[in-house]
Amino acid sequence: MIRGILIGILTVAVVGTSYWGYKEHQEKNAVLIQAENNYQRAFHDLTYRVDQLHDRIGGTLAMNSKQSLSPALADVWRITSEAQSDVGQLPLTLLPFNKTEEFLAGISDFSYRTAIRDLEKEPLSDEEYKKLKSLYSKSADIQNELRNVQHLVIENNLRWMDVELALASGQKQMDNTIVDGFKTVENNMEAYSESDFGVSFTAMKKDKREGFNQLEGKEINEEEAKKIAKSFVPNNVTNIKVTENGEGSSFGFYSVSMVDKKNKAEINMDITKKGGHPIFLVQNREIKKQAISLNEASNNASDFLTKHGFKDLDLFESAQYDNTGVFSFVSILDGVRVYPDTVRIKVALDNGKIIGFSARDYLAAHKLREIPKPKIAKQEAVKRLNPSLEVQEDRLAVITNELGEEILCYEFLGTIDQDTFRIYINAETGIEEKVEKLKNPEPIFQEI
Image 1 (cartoon, rainbow, N blue to C red):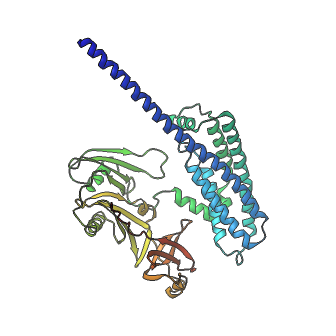
Image 2 (image 1 turned 90 degrees about the horizontal axis):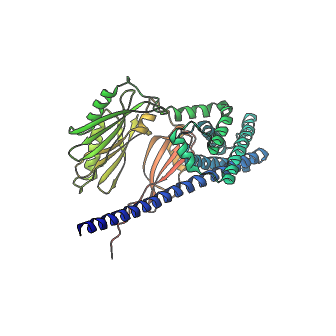
Image 3 (image 1 turned 45 degrees about the horizontal axis):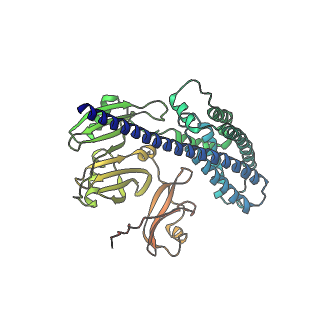
């Protein structure tokens, strides 16, 4: 009797385990198929964009009309941006592809700069036409290599998931056709000098690649990183672990993990090796019922920044998501808001404690600056605004444009009908640099 019951239980257990394993296998296959489809789409889109790019650059070389050239170059910029997006969706994280990405970034930068200027007053120079011809030639090389890889992928039914597994495994036998094809593209780009884009691109690339190149202070060790991390969190943390960053990062940092005993939550923090500056902090815990106001939370965030040495910051934005307050602070220099120097803080509204902090943008951009004098008066900038805009506030501000350059602008906050906008007018040229529509309060839907 008992033996029969045990056999029955074991049979049910085996059948249940088999069914569970079958379902797990199905779900895993579904995830793999979805990832493979995404990789295939991104790759074929990339190949198509490079085809478009080559044709569009060739078209600009044949144009004589200034009215046609500007939109054509703007289209080159758009296509290049889409190609860069496609590259970012491929599993190439572990495969060096930076030269090709730099080449695409160079095309994007060159085409944007020339498209936005008045080509009637400042037409393309002989040197710039020479650059266009060079870009046309090199884009043809990329086009041919990608088409060859595409042909092999289709003919041999190759899978991108195999590429990802090969790259992740770090195996020596890197004879995968796709990997080899992309290595060929990259090797061809190695011979392409960055000087072909001019000084402006070299400076732009340097800024993007160097990471936190303005940091001050001495190098810290793991024990010092642990001490700094403890100063940012509650006193009752345990299980403090410090990990040094691996190779490939543009700057050195320590990752610190801790456990908040009281809230039974893990806290993670990154700290730069140079100077021991905090990059980010995040505590994942359940936020209970709101007990403090958003205003109280913003005061807590401001006090937190002051305590940890962040000076001359002004609250720029605040928002509430469920029971969490999110605040953005920017530097103030000579009364001018410096938006690249941004620090973001999350505050739990149940107890007012800091549960998130990010100074990545601040550390990357903060430096000694000299704010230039505006070349146009505020009244002149106002004339460039939409006549329907009712201005509520105005100030001078430093922002970053599409090319990553810092520019001085007049910032206007105003409304058109029920919508609120923030508009930036270049204080040197009077150009409308950026228009941002601020979010309206979300409607509250109730059940009927």
